[in-house]
Length: 299
Length: 264
Picture 1 (cartoon, rainbow over the protein chains, first blue to last red):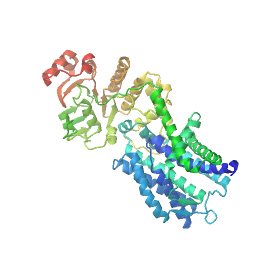
Picture 2: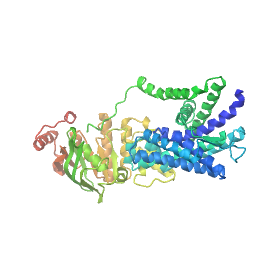
Picture 3: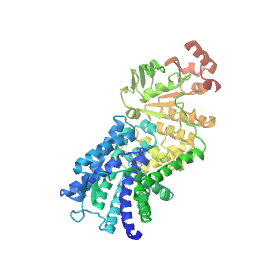
Picture 4: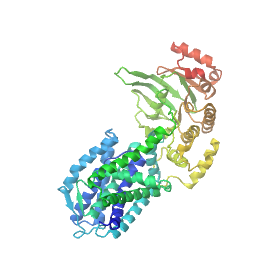
């Protein structure tokens, strides 16, 4: 396969996963929760979209429905965490497991074709350039909406929730509702990216979300590392996450083109993410002075 | 303004660590009272403040703020009556957000948070004027991340946030304990200024007996989850640290067990 021929495909996939990574950014960076629901909810978005389109529903409506169902998956995780007191990581894993069954039931089997030759879809790998343009448009609308939302009173209180829970409660912010809201928005976006992915690749598969959180984190981390210095504004930060997704897929294509065993890709992704996550920890541990925090225990 | 009736709170009941933190505590604050609270480690001072703020519920008793029974009201709802400053300067502000965003969050305490823009232009001018009062040069740094400010600056900002919309009750939990002496003095002076300007009913925990005597119009001393000494007006003005220590051993039957308080 020619590398340059593969480039548009990498860019299109990169944008799709970059949109997914925006969802991860909201939970991981803004809410300070590592939400593992996404491995399931991206597939749920794909399943809902695929089945609706197969059954004759307009593809834009199908994408909207996928988003709404994705939001519900975030609601489930949020309720596990806030109402049942389950730690956020475990809450996400539980929902993910629930979604495995749900996704199989939605599709009726482990995978479902959605060929662009048979069905009316808006993006497809058969026309990569048009797909890239549409994906960029969807991304821009999404970034604009999020930029607006996180600038409102409610969005501001959501950002504060990820920053400092004590302060939020003292300022009258319902932190539980905000955590749920963040998870709902995040998984809605993740499901949307699933709905885009199934159209692009022409099928949904029960395994398509496996390791999605790692790709999402990789995009967030790459985006931050490469564009962090220039992306001061919130909208630019979100776009740099998408940029991170694109670069992830270009590197992915490159190593495949260079002949790397594709079986190893997931392992390599995980190792790269682990290293990048370790960098700030090491920096804090070995290159800075310890900071003492005042204890409330001795009052 | 505040009424605590027969409040009891036990931590870790039924274990070897069982600790009776508040023992049938009663306290009534009048409108405009500025009460300083002293007592040894484990006397129940912070527990009392946390029970009032709703961090945890009391095992028994009731809490009434400004005529509202808030005993079972969750912390974030109770916040509309309260202004709070914590001992840890990192706790009162959101480090990753701008100064003006922090102020705007506090400005909306007790109000519904809507989809309107988080900060209006008119507000910005108001925040600038408020920050000028702190005299820390912060009025030109509205878009600085709060995490970049010093502990003293953050505590002054927290104090401003706690007092900006005239809470029914201001709760200060050793809010100068983590600051250097000079900064602590400045934050205390600001506390006096805001409390007297807004005529705020205030509960201030301090480990510094001198501060407890020189600030406020009333002083209470706690031991073993109860108030063992309650003095106000002229009588309070004439107090000395020695008299407080004497009062403590008389009322509690033990020596005052806090080196921090004695060293100050």
